[in-house]
Image (tube, one colour):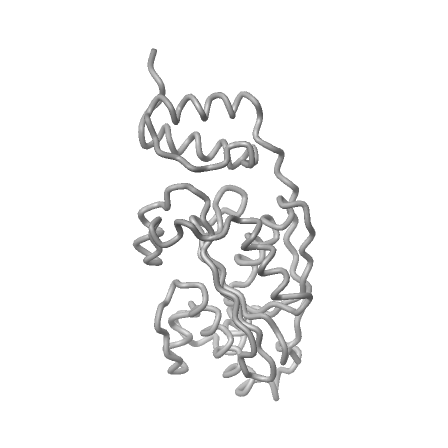
Length: 237
């Protein structure tokens, strides 16, 4: 039975780990139901945050400005988490973003974990909704800042402890960590043609930008180019 774990939640710029980015990491060390460590950080990518994400999370560009970059933030999390199993609500979402980030930074990230969403669906099929906020409401778990990483990680941990208390006696197998499976291939670096075109776009539209273009991957550069064209239009001769 999983009694020692890292409760993890991420806030991201979207739903696709290949194209979107981590905005915030919230993680807790939990031992026998007690929180014994906390890791929390924003990540400053030097890019605009989509308005719908700001509306959902409350995270603004001013809040992340000056925060650690991706490498510093992710390496800090890896040091904090060690090889402990992970726990989260719809954990594969957070795991997929973290694993892709680690792989693109040149590392590996293979973990076992526990998904409270899966356990909720099995143990409480009669409930009309199994989202984190609905499960928290079902158990009377207080939430201060829903859709913020650290608060959602804490809520997931509290939910797990309640589920374990109620159902582990009858279904102990549900409360064992299992291997997390998400295949990821390291993204290639930005191409020379992308570098030239991206710099020209930024200059043409007079966009203030502190992104390290040389550090972008090919897919990140493509997404940034598409975003600029969508917002400002193509270059005209």
